[in-house]
Image (tube, rainbow, N blue to C red; front, side, top):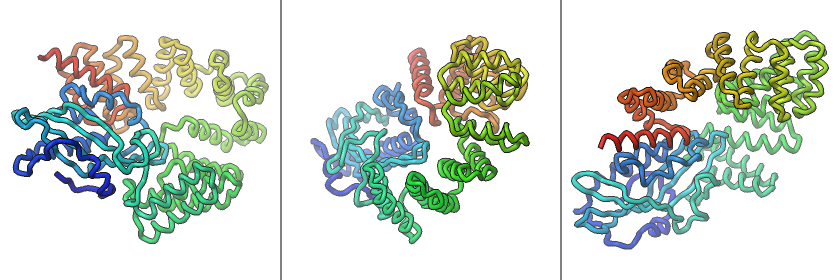
Amino acid sequence: MERTGLRLIGFSVLVAVMLPGDLLAVDEQPGAYFDGFLQTYEEAMSSGNPFLLEPFDPGLQVFQPLLSSPWYDGVERSLVALEGVQVTTIKAEEGLYALSFVKVQEDLLRDGTFTRGIAGIRVEVRLHEGRLTVLSHKTFAPKGAAAVYQSSNPRTWRDEHSEAERALYGGLEDLRDGDLQGAEEALTRAVTLVEAGDHPRFLMGPAYFIGMCRLYAAMLKYKRGDFPGAAQDLDLGLKVHPDFPAALNLRAHIHFGEAEYAPALDLWRRSLELSPEQPVVREVVDLLANATESKNKKFRELLLSLMHVPPSQAVQLLVPSVKDKPRHPVLVPLLAKAHLGAGDPEKALQVLEASRLVGKKLDATYLAARISLKLQQPERALELFETVRSLHPAYRDVTVFLVFLYASSGRFQEALAQLDNGPDSPVPAGVLAALRGKYFLMAGRFLDAVADLREATHTRLPSRLRAEVAYFLQRIDQQGR
């Protein structure tokens, strides 16, 4: 049985997945059942959601390793295609069959890079009374592949890819090998090919592809000190793909190095809007904003100098200033962060508490709450996060911390009250559903719990939460039997 899709694998690879057994005759093939399973398999692999396979794998016993894999947490989006599917009869009288195919997978990682590769798959199933059940799932290296498929490692590529893709992959390989000149030539060639119409089959399209090539080329030029050349590449890349946080960050950094603080601040802020989970960028934005808005030249120079020094040296620079101004709303949190970066959270919290800013100023209170949590003082952290919420209900990730702190202290109804599924909620919809289900279960509201846990399985979840949802649903199913 052959399915349509990307033709990325050669005939030698397809032959390799033919395993011993009698090939199922066309007139015997229960194709609709196998097609339904394979379509769901593709969707589950593309979305990183093994729960979609539950109808074929009760309790997700066979696909249990996928539930605990942390790899999905680092993937923004995947494209999966199954090639050369073959169905083999094991025992027709018992409804036992084997499905063998090659899985072609292309992943966009959250750091802006991507990987691509192939894997040989053999799945044994039982077809009984109109129900298909998965019995086993095995992965192997297909013939012709350069290496065993590993989801966390760079993938192999083959002649079937577009010329532009091969140029990019070759450039990245040169980069890993230290051949900077070869890498730059290959990346430039990749961009030229795409601009000439050689569009890659990359899942995010030619604009992202060009933006990524330009980013890597800019990084090469930046490392050898060619800042104008790096800026030119970044500007060209951002022109076709303006929503690229990594490129925005590097372009902002170049602006900052040229003392062009206003455009640097604008780009870093834009990067944060696109990808809020960048704590280092957030710290830079706060620091630069305070510096550029100050009319005090000495204060401005102090803040700008902090962007070039390690935490230990920042402590030395800030201590005299904080001694002169022990309640300064900007300098005190900066000194606390410097102590924290230097590995001294106790001193950081001491500085904040001594300033009397905690409970009055938003940044100082939030920082004290985070440090209290780091010091394993959950009751104090909860008190401080509640204060942060009273000062600014939507401040950063305060809602997320309150949810977990209420729940960890057994205050499930209060945890549930934080879970607002509105458009401005800081918690992703799938995570909200999983947390609601978990806390409903602990609060004894079983019907509500099941509904939300089932809803959560249709979304991408962090690995730990995904494993918890699987465990809860398994226990509920066992009790219902």
